[in-house]
Image (cartoon, rainbow over all chains, first blue to last red; front, side, top):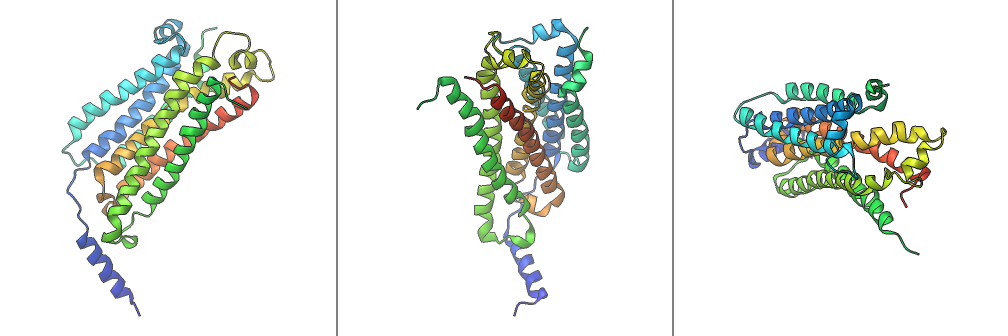
Length: 126
Length: 170
């Protein structure tokens, strides 16, 4: 019969047999923060496009798609550029992922707010 | 019995990439959830990690495929200025205009948050690999982002399905 001690021993043995390559958490924190920045950027561009018709026109990078083409492409560019910059900054640093997640969740929430019609339509010119 | 080109593209956008997204999410979530020290043997780990990486990367690719085909292929037909386009049809009736003013306006934007967050979750899994077993906090972070990505996709997908019922792209 297997005892709890046997199970604990087995688990320890398993752990010893698994390879855990040493990797810093910095790149993970950078990716998480950049994801939040990308989401915030989309919300910001969506609200700004509603508030300013000239900005909305400028965002019409494709006539068939309209301003959505510029909003989404620009948000993706902001996300990728911020990811690259943050990756370089944090690649070897032990930045806590919990802190990064908290910041990113706030940025994502603001991004969702910016894409929410009831919110961004407040800024539409009369 | 046939589909028009537009109907094919809406199928690829919603049911093709959408179904792949759902399948990949289920597999990826199960893999992430069960990546616990007590449930893993060295022999099973290699296969499990490979499946997990395939699952999360597939979900990210499916999410990108969904938003790219939705925005750049299907959406122009939806917003066509012609009187019989779905957007024109919805806005022509007070009873249906909110499907555009709220439903479509939110869906077309919020959907783009999904591939961004799915890519971040996929990056964490691919980059950190077996370390996720030891670092519970990072594994939970990946799960949170993964589920959040799914939630945004579900919100966008649900409005897409409802709007298609009311005013389909034909």
